[in-house]
Image (tube, rainbow, N blue to C red):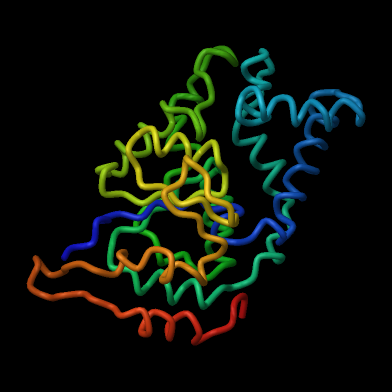
Length: 256
């Protein structure tokens, strides 16, 4: 029996490393500082506006541009991500071993910019674990050519247009792809497009997710069929037993 999956697509932030790391909180603080320092909003308004723009437009940058603010994406990401405490992200050799045990294509799909994605992967020690990084620049190639802020809407997950661009760029058959994300709306969008979906960092079952994964330590138990398949043109059989996978997962402590 072949594995039903020939490609695994991973979100990055709060998926490959936990939200409790502190990066997400720092991003929120930096966004609010951007609204205050670059856009002239008050401190009290900045916090509520950040939440409002995220809920309505998917991100603060998308919202600002839609409202007519001529915000350069590189400047925004440089401000919001450029001052992050990346040293809070620790190498995860356990996750690295797990990823290297997976024979299928592995792709990063993040709303963040490429510089941020590369920095995070390097801090995790996972920079050589993925075939491709699909990021903000991939979904918004025309943004630098815009003659006005609202000419090209910013595309991000969970937008269907953003999801379709990612699948097309990666040349992915959605019926055989497994999509990992910590955001329910993103998981739901993936489900609509035919992806098999995994909600990461949660425990309760939801209709949008085919699987729920509290953390990657449980991956072999939750989705063992990842490791069943063929390689080398079908000549070499790959069939890892659960005990073999568990030995991979217990070799090194998390975050070591």
